[in-house]
Length: 332
Ligand code: NAD
Image (cartoon, rainbow, N blue to C red):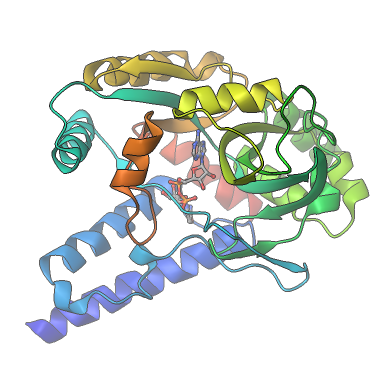
C-alpha cells in the first residue's frame, strides 16, 4: 500500500517538475493550466492524506522555476511567493472561515479584490525615486536581472513623481501583454513565417526574458503594480488598498478594476462581476485575487511554505481549456 502511494506521489511530482520546467524556464507550456492545476491538486490531496511523504522539495511546496543562468541573478530580500487557489465558492468560503478563525475575528473582513493578471511577476527597485533594478520572481528566492528590459516598458516610470518618495521602494506587479498587442504580435510573426506564441502569458514571458532589450522594446508589454516588497524611508498606509493608492501617487500604474469590499459575499460578487466582464477586458485574466486589506491582519496571518495565508487566487472555471491545448499543439 505505502509503496503504491509513494510511487504515485513520485510520479505526480516528476510530472509537475517537467511541466514547471517547460512553463517557467523555457516559456513553452506543454499542457493547459487546468491540467497542471488538476495534477497539482492530486498531489496536494495525497500529501495531505499521507503527511509522512511530504518533503520540502515537493513542487507543492515550491515557487515557480529556476532563474536562467544566461541572466545575472538577483536575490530577493523578501521572497516572492505564489498564491493558494480556490476553485469554487465553497473553497473561497473555507478560506474566509480559516482566516477569521486564525485572527479570532467575528466581524466581516475588508478585502482588496484584484483581477488575476495572466503575465509574470516582477520586482522593480527604485532608489531615491530612480529605477535601478528589476528582476523576475525565479524560484521565489533568486530571480533574473532584467533591468534593461523592464526600462523599455512604456507605462513603467523611470523616475517616481510626487511627494514623500521613499529612499528605497521595491514595487511588485505583473508584466503582461494586452489582448490587442498579443494578436498583433502573432499576426506579424505568422506573416513572417516565424513562431507564434501560445497565449499572452507565454508571449509576455518570452518577450521580457530576452538578452537584447531592443527586442523587448518592440513588444507591447504593460505593467500593473499590486504590492510592495522592501520599503525604506517612507510612512506607509495600514491597508493594502491605501498602499496601492500611494504607489499610484508615485506614478505607478494600477489595474483600474481593483476594488475594496467588505465581507466574503461582496468579494464573491466581485468575482462574478469580473467573470462576466472577462471577455470585454483588454487583458487576459485567469481569476481574481482576494487579499485581506488590513496590513496588521496580514502580518498576523503570515505565510505558509509557498504562499501568504492572507490572500487567495480565486480561479475561473477552465472554459478555454481545449483552445489553449490546440494553441499549444500548434506552437510545438
Ligand atoms: P499563480 O499564477 O496561481 O499565482 C501567483 C501569481 O499570480 C503571482 O506570482 C503573480 O505573478 C500573479 N498575479 C496576478 N495578478 C496578481 C495580483 N493582483 N496580485 C498578486 N499576484 C498576482 O501561481 P504561480 O505559482 O505563478 O503559477 C502557478 C500557476 O501557473 C498554476 O496554477 C498554473 O495555472 C500555471 N502553470 C501552468 C503550467 C503549465 O504547464 N501549463 C506550469 C506551471 C504553472
